Structure formats: C-alpha cells, structure tokens
Image 1: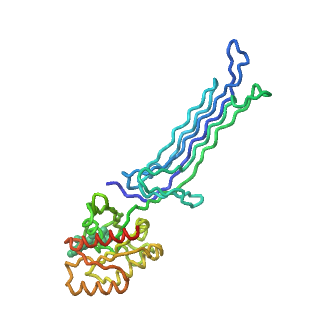
Image 2 (image 1 turned 135 degrees about the vertical axis):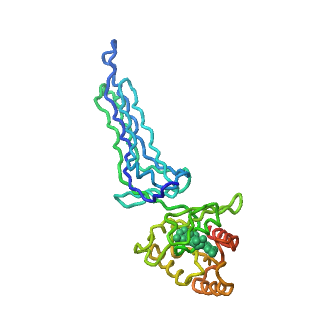
Image 3 (image 1 turned 90 degrees about the horizontal axis):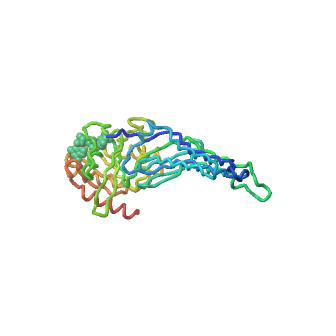
Length: 331
Ligand SMILES: Nc1nc2c(ncn2[C@@H]2O[C@H](COP(=O)(O)OP(=O)(O)OP(=O)(O)O)[C@@H](O)[C@H]2O)c(=O)[nH]1
Ligand SMILES: [Mg+2]
C-alpha cells in the first residue's frame, strides 16, 4: 500500500537550446571552404503525463527536482547538435499544477495519458552556415540557444470521483463504500478510522460505472482544524453528487447540520452540490424511528432520503439506482 501524499512542491527546469556553431570548412585544396557551423539542438521540455496506475504524489517527496537535458551545440562540417529528449514526468489522475510565483493553475491533469508541457525547452541556435549572403561570404555570426525555463510548482491531488461520501466519523462511510464496490477500506467501531481517502468503482453494467470517494469523517470545527480537518474535502471537489451518510443511532439532524456547515465553510459551491441522504444502520433502529427520521430529514433538506444498512447490505441497490439516475440527470 502506497503512502497517500496529496501535496508536493517541486522545481522544474527545461533544457537550454544548444548554441549554433561558428566554423569554416578547411580542406586541403579549399582554403576558403565557407561557413559550415551547424545548428544547436533543442532543449528538452518538461512534460507531465497522467499515469492511471499512480494514486499518490509520494514520488515527488523523493524527487523534488525535475530537470530536462540541454540541447547539444552545433558543430563544424554542418553538423547539427542533437536535440535533448523531453522529460516525461508521471503524475496520478487528478493532479492540479500551480505556478508558485503567480499562484495560477497551469494544468489540471485528469484523463489517463493526458499531457501538459510545464516547462518548454529552449530552441536550438543557428549556426553560421545560415548567415551567408552575397556581401558576407565568411560570417562570424551564430545565434545562441534559447534559454531554459524554470519554476517552482505546487502539485495538488484532487481525486477523480463522481460521487463523494460525507458524514461524521463512525457513520459507516467506509462500510458503505465496501458494500458499493470491490474496495476494502479499513472499518472499525471508533471515529477517525479512515485517515486518507479511499476510492471504489460501482459497476452498473459492462458499459456503465462510476467512482465513489470515501473521505475521513468531519466533526464540528473541522474547518478550524478539529479532527482531521477539512483538507480532505478537496478530494470531493470534482464530484457531481454527494451522499450524506448519517448514523441512525446518533442525533441525525445535528450531525447533518454539522457536516453541511463544515462543507459550507470549506467551499460554498460544494455545499450547493446535488445530494442524497443515506440513513445508515437501520438494522439497529425500529421501523417507526426510521420513518420519522426519513420525514424529518426530507423536510429539512428537500433531498431524497434512503434508509440502508451498509453492514447488512440492506437498501444498497436502491441507493445505487438513485445515485446512477442523479448522475445521468446531471450529465
Ligand atoms: N450495525 C451496523 N453497524 C454499522 C453499519 N455500518 C457501519 N457500521 C459499523 O459502524 C462502525 C463505523 O463504520 P466505518 O465504516 O468505519 O465508519 P466511517 O464513517 O468510515 O468512519 P470514519 O472512517 O472514522 O470516518 C463500524 O464498527 C461498522 O461496522 C450498519 O449498517 N449497521
Ligand atoms: Mg471510514
């Protein structure tokens, strides 16, 4: 299991272009053989590329410098300098690249194989063989290679999932993820079991599936750093719908209020996302309590409220159907 790292700061530098050469052909029987300085080669680009197999920015903790090679200078006898190969840096899906100097997002890499040039290599300089004219038979001019580009960039991972599970610690989010998908996150009868986000894929058919993210639980004051804080909410910023998981054995209205407030404090836009409520642990509650809770939560939110037992796998299919139809509607 890879350690989950979702932030990194790295230095990138492209390659400088090779200088053009100043050279003349000097052959035994051609004393003034003419200018023959070749062009320099292009410097390497630094290109980020999404690798589906990666799920963390951990590698960058060990390799915080990504430097491409310089182009080779041109040489005599009209020989070109070799261009440097580009440096391809693999990043996990969902990596946002931010230029530290301007604080601007310069790339958002989501799809497998997607690429972005983060630092462009310098062009090769021109050799003096290009500068011959009728009045200038022996030019002593060549141009230098283009400069390297360098910058510090911040990488932020924002997981790619259509549905985000949110709720208080111990509500049963990870149990629900396990019931929905083949994911096997850690589940335990105490708060803060989940320390980093988990992803699972819900398979509807051969052609249809969607990804669900389970994040660490939120508590009151999470936006001020309480519990594990709200920094993991970043990982549901790309989701299209949220599922609020509530534990029927606790005060559901208070829990719902708390979680919604923390999301609002993190990002008001995220708080507006379409949502479904999953009232969990119905195996521990009476039918009447479940019905009352459903009515109360529907009244407060206006959302669809489904009763489930993640552990006993009750009500899971209707919940999947509700998520799928909401995703289709908001496509
Ligand atoms: N009886 C019952 N217990 C459940 C149900 N769902 C989850 N649990 C139990 O509730 C406890 C917490 O479940 P988790 O899935 O770890 O809860 P979580 O929301 O992921 O918690 P954090 O990771 O701490 O935020 C575990 O002991 C589960 O076995 C359910 O439907 N019925
Ligand atoms: Mg959990």
